[in-house]
Length: 50
Image (cartoon, rainbow, N blue to C red):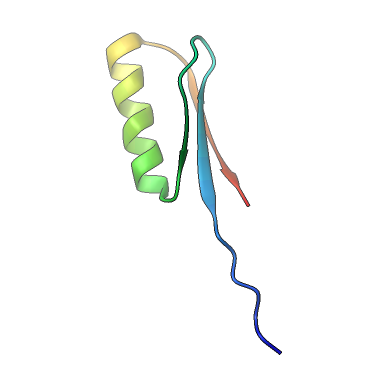
């Protein structure tokens, strides 16, 4: 029986504007989150989706 591979993705959503992004790597999503927060001061959420 073959094992099912999980493709984890990370969904970034700004709570204060229309920025939304889907990333394959947590590091990429976190870097985008930090950049957006530094530039705007907005609150941003990053969650793993399967």
